[in-house]
Amino acid sequence: MKQEKSRNSFSGSIGFVLAAAGSAVGLGNIWRFPYLAAKDGGGLFLVMYLILALTFGFTLLTTEVAIGRKTKQSPLTAYTKIHEKWKFLGIFACLVPVIILPYYCVIGGWVVKYFIAFLIGDGAAAAEDDYFTGFITSDMQPIVLLAVFLFAVAFIVFRGVNKGIESSSKIIMPLLLILVIGIAGFSLTIHHADDSGVVRNGLQGLKIYIVPDLSGLTVKGFFTVLMDAMSQLFFSLSVAMGIMIAYGSYVRDDANLVKSINQIELFDSLVAFLAGVMIIPAVYTFMGREGMEASGPSLMFVSLPKVFAAMGGIGNVIGCMFFAMVLFAALTSAVSVMEAVVVSFMDQFHISRIKAAAIETIIALAGGVLVCLGYNKLYFDVVLPNGAHAQILDIMDYISNNALMPVVAISTCILIGWVVKPELIINEAEKTGCKFGRRQLYVVMIRYIAPVLLVILLLKSIGILNII
Image (cartoon, rainbow, N blue to C red; front, top):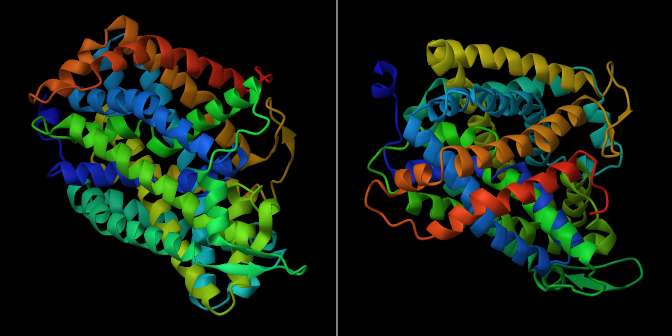
């Protein structure tokens, strides 16, 4: 009880909202959301995503934040407080960020590399075909930049909840939003003529992005969009990885939980939408529809540098702003991932923040070095159960995102929906006197709809259900 009483907390709701939004706004919003929107019929995906964010995402986000605040515990220890026989779920929830942090910091190092390249005016070189491959397969540079990014993350976590996480979020998140809006606005003003004389512009790309394309839509196609939108919510809202439980444990008992969660949903959905406005019009203008087929690292580190290079002199400026924005997004997300592990070590083993953060930094550095070496000295190629070719980074991503995260989410729905009952979460949300506006929706989602959708997503993610 002494530990719970002395636990740090966010100074106010704005600190919690910005920290949680900073966790939610990460690489998944920037390199995955626009690709899925372009692939899945533009506006159709956007509508499906918004509906799921207000129902499915709201349910998981509310559950995890409320569990954190009620127990004042980390993801590793909170589930035991809810029900003593569900400790295994805490272990799974803690394993997810342990696996994610090393490879996320490796990618953060890649972002640092490209930010520096555009900052010093070397964007044209960064756009060359073999630049990215040459960089990630080199011996030491990716490891050095991994360490730079990881130590920046560790520095913020070392400083604690108020001086580290909250203070940095209050600075970084407004800057990130300004950059996103600025780049998105610029993306709509550009135009370009290709070698055949065809002129494309940003507004045409915006139309592809926001206007629903229902041509040839089948039942299977509809379920594909549904599953894509739902899997994106895991990345967008940082659920099922222990983060929101950790951050929820720092929320004061007198805070309006319902209002804060609504603000997180709004902020995250806005940035995800604007990421599409930034990227799709620009890629379409300079590369056509074919360029919009890229996602993940190939979109960010191969396709987009070519787009910036095609812009001419201003391309270095826009590229520098873009990778600065991506760096901010990656940093706030990585901080939340590390914090979920650090506070778990603190609560489970009753050690100081400094010691817990030092241990996790060493673990993440060791794992990150292995990921870097996976592109040269330790390179191999295996086929995952879902048919994808993979090496170390892909295997870690598959275990955490395709397997563990759906399992954590399904188990949480069963625990809250059927074992301890939804009233536990509802009462926590309403204990300050605020009204839980989506009460009936929450009960139906946590008990019936969310578990069914999550089981389908899990079976699809691990390659068992290939008909969707």
